[in-house]
Image 1 (cartoon, rainbow, N blue to C red):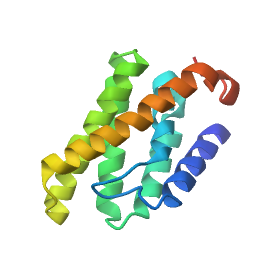
Image 2: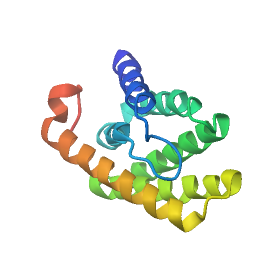
Image 3: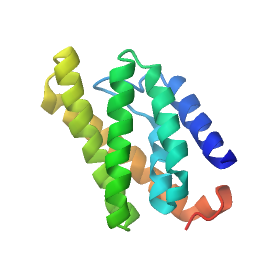
Image 4: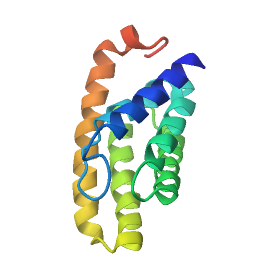
Amino acid sequence: MIYNAVLAAIYVALTVINPIGTMAIQIRISEMLAVIPFFNRKFIPGMLIGLAVANFFSPLGLIDVATGVGIAVISYTISYFIKNVWINAVQYSVLCGIFVGLMLLTVLEIPFWFSFVTITISTLITTLLGTVLFSKVGHRILPNLE
């Protein structure tokens, strides 16, 4: 429980202090942490709580909370069937591009393909960096990280 609370807090802090962590052009360094549940499912609650709290501070508030948590739930459910962390990092990034792109189109009328491309690419970069990082040193940072 403590590790999940710390994970959530770090995700929130990294997202909230980031000046370009929301909207169509975003680079969320905190998304590197989103891959942790692909290594060990016991960290899903911490990521979901972190996503919910961090997205609450976005300019879109509750709609961003619902979208972000929904993406994570779908992605972590898919990861139950796909055990490859690299594929899961990619599917998470694509889901972010699709659903955040649709949300921004619906709420702010930002063109879907622009949002889809920018969000997918930025999330792919950060999740792949996170996958490399946690593949190499994750077992030193979090317990039972395989």
